[in-house]
Image (cartoon, rainbow, N blue to C red; front, side, top):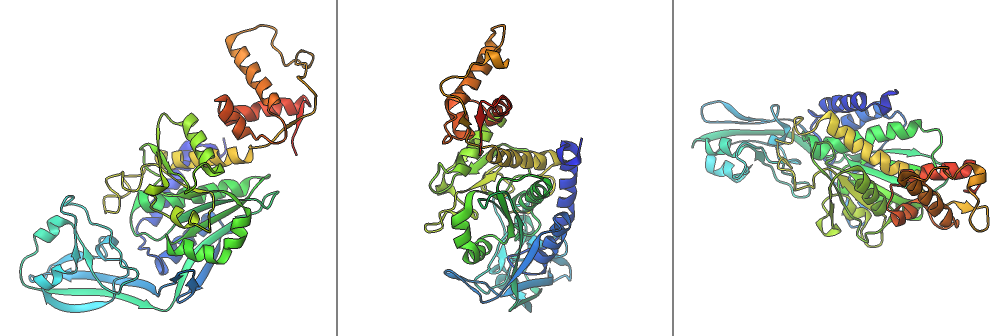
Length: 432
């Protein structure tokens, strides 16, 4: 069996990539994003890496200065390093301005962030568009800080540079596009950050190896929010014209249940595909309204953009307890969880590819028996199969796709595709 089809091999490969990417300190700009994209480019050699200069206008936004960090720490009055960026890159508020000062504990407290209700977790805090600095630590650490003078150092830079993103365009037989988008802007968090780009990377590898793609695939690795806004500002006209379905990929590597956030309009091709696959592939799943949006579906579905994009996840953003904390480590995801997310999205793409619109070549019902398509013995299973076969013929009007048929018949779409193959071989129907 090829590696791409072997759940154990591909799951282990995905988890290995997570282990490699996990230590990197990422933000919405900077060398951490470049390093991450360089590793992903090893998996996807045709990935193009783009740089957008700071100050570039993107609709109502402007690409911010580039942020990089080398070190950060707090030394307590006893001379002990009590907070250390090198032990966890979550210890520093992302986009913190540089600081090298001594101050009292009361002064320091104004720059500290912790979670009283989760006292052993380091929170993930950002300040992208307001110049400030800060440290994140567990609440237990914070409670144990003693009065006195603290040495505080953040060795960072905030200056004109670039926003960096990766793009892979895989041409198909038509100009119609499927968008697959994920983000590469969070530091060391496994499910919320890394599962999306890892699953997307392996989808890109699989799609790259397909010899016959019906759709063109636009696969992008971007910083969340500002990245999608920047990307849309450069590509919106072509995307509005060509994108027929899109998937934003996030929080998809754990072993919990599946969920998705519907598009703003709901009922798009992407909504229908992911809902259909989940209905037949898993025991239960959660459908979130667009009112519960939280990622780049906000930008892709914004009024005037109106792309048919859903966000596909395991647990929702705020529905897994480790979300946006240091507890979202490599123990939260698994090879099986990553492969499950990959398999779900791969099935969605396969359903998009097989959503053909057959047309019958025969007026009225064809005679099945003379084509050896009608069973000699009648059983319940045979009756269901024949009924579905006849239903496909009945709706083969050149206007009805296999997804709509599957929805009408209450059957999985892949069964409709198998029936279509039989009918094509028997020359009862044709497809363009």
